[in-house]
Image (tube, one colour):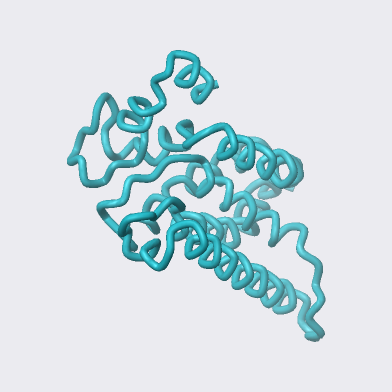
Length: 193
C-alpha cells in the first residue's frame, strides 16, 4: 500500500529519500529519524518487480513460518530482520542507502530454512544435522546473493561503488538472523505448554 500511494502520486523518489535507510544523512533524514529508517525502508521499493518478488517470497515462506511461530513472533522476526539487514549493510558500506523489505524477508527465509529444512546430512545427532543443513542453506544463500550482486552491480557491489543496485549484505544479515532466531522464537511461543 505504501508503494502504491507513492507510485500513484509519482513520488517514488521522494519516498525513497524520506523513508529509505540513509545512514549518511545524520540523525534525521526527511521526516524519519535514522533509528526508525530500517523499518520505514521496508515500505519503499525500487519498482513493482522489486515489490512483487518480495511479496511472493513473503507469501510462500512467511505464511508457514507465521503458522508455526505465531503472529507476535513473526512480527518480532520481521522487525529484527529489518534492523539486522540495515546493520549488516551499514557494516559493509556505511554510505549506501537501502530500500525494500528484502532484508526482513530474508530473516523470514532463514527461519523457514530452520523450521522446514530437511535433514539430508548423515549425523547421529538430529540437532547437529539440522544445524549442518541450515549452514549449507545459508552458504547457498550467501553465494546466490554474491552472484546476483556481481551480476547486477559488477564487482563494485561490495564496496558500494557505481552500479551497486542490490543490498547483498542486508540479505545475508537478515538470513543469518532468521536462522539464529527460529528456534528461540519457537520456544517462546510454547513457553507455557
